[in-house]
Length: 309
Ligand code: NDP
Image 1 (cartoon, rainbow, N blue to C red):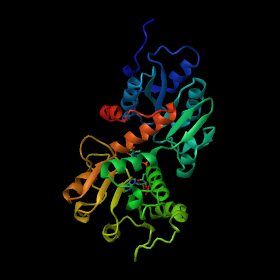
Image 2: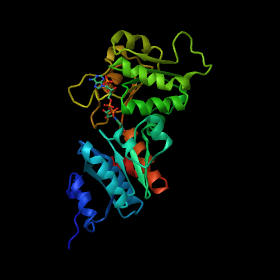
Image 3: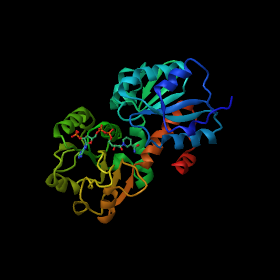
Image 4: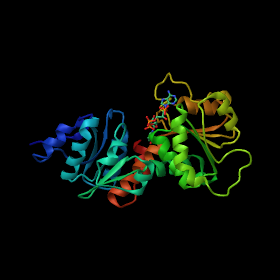
């Protein structure tokens, strides 16, 4: 029988995993990796990971799986039985997976979310978003987090990974601005111990949660170097920049975790203000490369993955 090519399908489903558990998979090269999400059609991970697999002559492929929250438990069990190498998890599965894997690596435990799973008979939950972000900042701005005063916009999953990485790398200062102040305060409280050291920064606090308003942004901007958008503001073409250009200043580095081919509203605002800006493609690339390295225990072909994106 002629084998099917996975590229013919936009996304596989739980039913496909169930079929494969009963009969041999008729896909060539066999599917042994993927991303679970709902929605998942927008994910760029397959093109990046498949380019890496091809380059490294690993005879398997990576596809999208449209998996709803109530299907996640069974889908994870099936990839273990089907001897998948692993999967990535995206919205809305990153937190739910904490309870569904066999064990959690430190990265997933401290961030409180799983973005990648490695299967070796047991499912190991890990998180490469934080380290991927640090590598992206180094690549985009040639600077390490430990030298920076950082303001993060948002306190959800992506913000948690980024805030934890900034704390672990002992950044100079961390400000969390969130629409729901309470959520920002809770995240800051979790990080309190990392910032208890003797470093003195003059009149501003080393760790702070602030309200989402113009006066608060205006005050902080003179006291931060890097601003990171970790909210979905900018996903829609009509979204405003989370901080208007008139408040931004030329000394700033602006990183938008949202990735798109066109400039995001936040990166456009940064450029308009004479600041440097970059979008989240580099974070996507590096979290993916780190997952590849964990799955295969070898260096990821970064340039090949970058070109594929
Ligand atoms: P979550 O839903 O977990 O968190 C969303 C956060 O954004 C919350 O803090 C929420 O605030 C805030 N927010 C939502 N809507 C608005 C709004 N209209 N105005 C202001 N604040 C708002 O999402 P994630 O953290 O998982 O994802 C956030 C973004 O990060 C996504 O857009 C995604 O594209 C990007 N991302 C990029 C990655 C990459 O590799 N480049 C990796 C992971 C994520 P509140 O607490 O008030 O609800």
